[in-house]
Image (cartoon, rainbow, N blue to C red):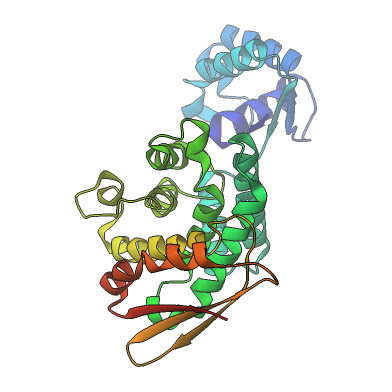
Length: 305
């Protein structure tokens, strides 16, 4: 167990002082040591506790309560001990801010790795078809890049769209009926590492509207999002709907998609694999033509070669 902040620091210092380790600061405190420390600290008067290096006059008044909490935690959970870390919540927040600013940093790569590992773990846990999820994600990433001049989304939406593409079927695990609502609940309430609660709600909202319903400003999932992000979420939802449409048959019938832009029209040309048809995929995309016009103010046309 890793422990941070003032109480953990004081107990690690007490372990060094009371067990006579001299000036060498202990960072690991075993369960047996924690039992002895809790007993010893509770027997000492406040003025003697103040003399222990690392505790001091202010923490001396409350250290007994902290020691008992740590003793009980280690004992009841059958943990071997704890390791004190001088890093805390503030350090983590700064590291995440740096990572969000520049993904090439060490912390950026670590958070990216944690996110992907957490997402793939959720895919496995909720028995999502991994092959299909990866296909939809690949299509979503392609559309995000190819239609960048149309959607104008901030770079962070690419990450959120990617996560939504991987997780949009988790609701099937609960029930196929109303599975889109189940998807929203699971994503927004799951501990997907590397994402803030607000980011999880954005991902959940993007994954929520892949059925017949379309988002409105009165919907709970949309109202739960910061107003500044709502327009972007609407655009990301449409991109994911198109990505899903390109993979609706789950047969990888679409080998390639070509995107072209005209004055007021975006055209998707589907290149099928040999001896395969893409009628189902074309039909699914055509269903969102009106929605495309509503969100982007442009016409959407499709063709197959």
